[in-house]
Length: 335
Image 1: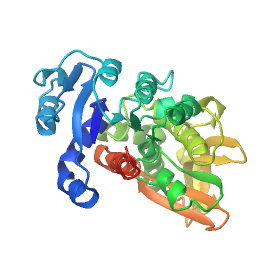
Image 2: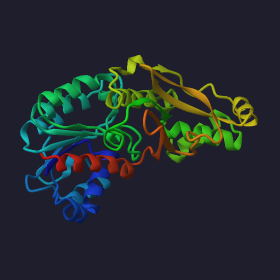
Image 3: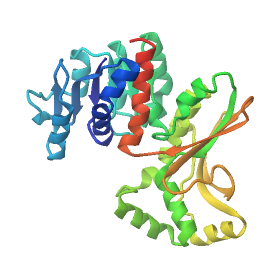
Image 4: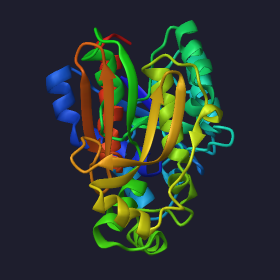
């Protein structure tokens, strides 16, 4: 299988590391040999039809250079690479931009137009135009997979489609952002202020220097839209989500919740055609009460009852567990 990697930040580099680590296992268990024929970042595109040396590409990035420093790389951008380089599948791993979904949206649509399967971790385009992407993939007879866009290594989408394929899933709720869960966990355990825990989380690299995407519920809202469209078949976009973040959570509120046997969690829920993200009281012994940076999702089904899935919601290697799973799935069903 020939693949292109568009975006060589944490996720793209993580994929390269995973492909190196799992090369023998993929061949042995799945008779799958993956050749990365191009890697594109903001500096340009490295190309080798015989397969890029992934160790060399990682070494170049580690030394603070762009992929343009790879031998014979050019200033070709993502769209040009997708148009001109022969491949079976594109892994779109550029950063999420909720304002317009670009450049990921254009990358995905171009790949689909070229008849290439798409695997992505990029939430922005899916939160804004899921139906357009999905319909385009069907029209062009290619597979469009996005397990890594929700919950990192937590296998919720494929689990719902495969393991629960005979069930009707009526609602989904959960903690879909590790940064906010870490902050709220620390506030509960140590009775510290939101501002203090946020500052410490930023120092530890758990929260971004601009944390608004996480703490204002935007990230959770994007993921909720993907679950609504991708699992429940509800045609909604990011603009349809009622969203409230955690900035206003006080130590006093956290303490009162604890005294009554509850914790405060940022919960995303899709139910009865409505999508909402908000801080909620969760009983201490409830399945949604997970700590630290963990994510959790509760699927309410008609046959199996309530199913809970817990997993690491972030991390370059963890997220690539989901990306690799999607790649293998496409390989199994035929490229």
